[in-house]
Each structure stands twice: as C-alpha cells, then as structure tokens.
Length: 292
Image 1 (cartoon, rainbow, N blue to C red):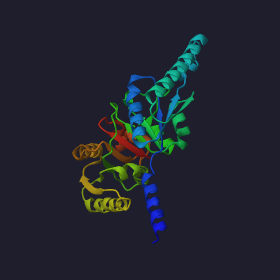
Image 2 (cartoon, rainbow, N blue to C red; image 1 turned 90 degrees about the horizontal axis):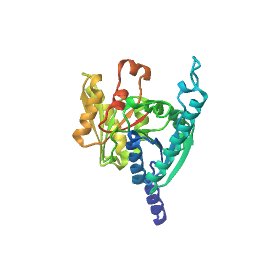
Image 3 (cartoon, rainbow, N blue to C red; image 1 turned 30 degrees about the vertical axis):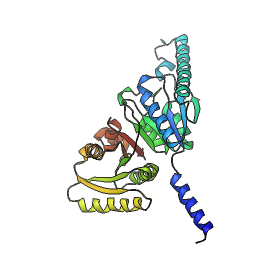
Image 4 (cartoon, one colour; image 1 turned 135 degrees about the horizontal axis):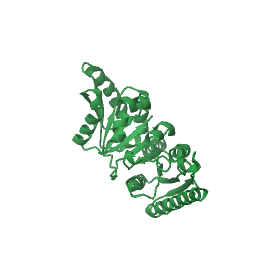
C-alpha cells in the first residue's frame, strides 16, 4: 500500500469513527418538572459537540375548544390562547438562556407536542424525551414518549425523572431476536463504540439458555467487528421480571444506559397485559435508548 493510500485509509477510519449523533431534538416546557430533560439534552449535546434543536409546542386543551352545554365563553377561550402563547415564549426564552453555550436551533409550533416532535424529527439523529413522571403527562402540552418512539422513526433517549448527566461508559443492551432489537442496536452504535464496556443481555425462559447464548454471542461478534468491547450475558427469568433483571445488571456493572427495542408486541397489548417497554418507560433509575 502506498503512503497516500495509507493516509486515505487512516482518514476513512477516522471519519467513520467520528460518525454519531450530530443533531438532537428536545421538547421544551417552562415547567420545573421538565427541567431534567432539558438539562440532560444540553449536557449531551455539549459532550457530542452536536446541535440541539429545541421545540416549543402546545395547543389549547380540547375541552376548551367547545362546550356541548354552551358554557364556554369566548373571552375565556381567548385567554387560553394567550396563555398558550405566553408558555411558548417562556419556553423559547428558557431554552435560549440555558443552551447559550452550545449550537442550537429553535422551532415554535401550535400543535400537539407529540405530533409536532414526530413531524420535525426527520432532521434529528436522536430525540431526547422523558425527564418527567408519566403521571404528569398532559397531551395538550406534553409529549407522550411512547407515541414518539412509535411515530418518529428515530431513536429516543428517555431521561429518568430526576435527570442526570449521561456517561454511557458502560451500556447494557436488552437483547431479543426481533426487528425492534436489531433496530435499537444499530441506532445505539455511536454510544456502543464510545463505551468502555457493553453487555448484551438476554433474559430467556428455562430450557432456552443455549439458544440465548448463541444469539447473544452472534450479536457480540458483530459488535466486536465495529471495535465495541462487548460480552454476552444470559439470565433465566420469567417475562414479568425482565425489566428488574435489566436494572439489576445495569447497577451491577455500573451502567447508566440501557438499550432496548420497543413494542415487539402491540402497544395496546402491553397496556392491557404489561410488557418490558412499559416497564422501562416507567422506571426511574437509568437512561434508556429505545427504537421501534
């Protein structure tokens, strides 16, 4: 190989290793309970040297748009619109002040936040969501994280309610031989390549240990070809304990990030009967990256 060819090969490898999340997207609200999400997004954008897009999105609640009994007054409806615009202005001011030290863009839309986030996410590499308790969700001014995962077509990083700074030094990959898991693995590759250690973990039923070991070993082999320091771990446990086992492993190895595919079953089925996606969305211990 000539010196020029060697230089080109080195440049190509360097360029490939630098490929990652260049644009992050976060929904901004002028509320104390949404601050952890914004703080985490700003910290991550700074760490990745990425541009952070902030979105202010809100609508007037549907119950305010009309009253079947004729009790809604037009002046009250006008006040609701004024309050919405004030909230959007406050959200922009908060974002510009908090993120002044990094590269940013701002968008304001008067539409449901989840719908707006999914619609403009085509230019984002990663959506930062969560950072608030699920029971505080009000769809007219807050994003439904599950809706984002299903509709955006982008990886979604879910911030725990208390926030925090994502290190991703050690990452736990929740493996299941599904399309969603394979998508999440590919979407998380920038984090996995930068991590010091990655654990590919499958929780299987009794009698399936050998199959689970083959599956996770295959994933580990693929990751190692990307330069990822990965190893496999197989645990036997019932479905209802999958989330608990993942959180236990994350604590054991010192991981603050779990990567998982979302909704390999229908969302409606998980709402009725429970599921790993719902459990991971509801936990408050660690960051979770999900793709569908």
